[in-house]
Amino acid sequence: MKPLAPELADARTSRRGASTKWWHAGTRPDYRFSLANERTFLAWIRTALALIAGAIGIDQFASHLATPPLRLALSLCLLAVGGLLGGLAYRRWAGAERAMRHDEDLPRSLLLPLMALVVTLIAVVLAGFVISG
Image (cartoon, rainbow, N blue to C red):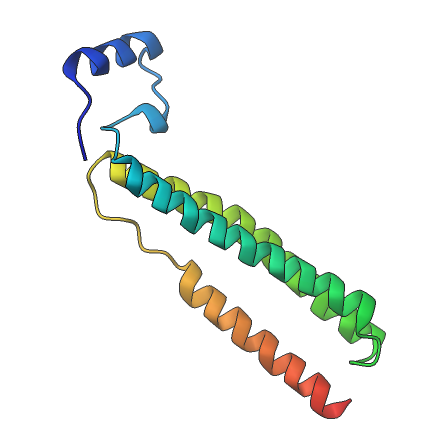
């Protein structure tokens, strides 16, 4: 990571004053790392959209899968997880950007084990619906 030239850093600080936003603090990371972080963010967003699409699909097209209240419950769970994942994806992206700007270790992400657990639970529930249906 290349630090800003001193004259640019001073100009940025004086222009923004004491309330410098986090994305202007520290040193600018190598753009390749920022772009990789952005691609990871977009992958999490695609996963969130897939969960939301799955919720709509179960609600609208799987009438034979289970009773209406069970389908509704599963759809609402998928919608909630998809929405939460979208918000958490931004927090993860911002945390990684902050860490790169301050030359710190990347923050540990709880999204990976959380999503593994959620996907496993959804698969087990859907398998139960398919077997019983």
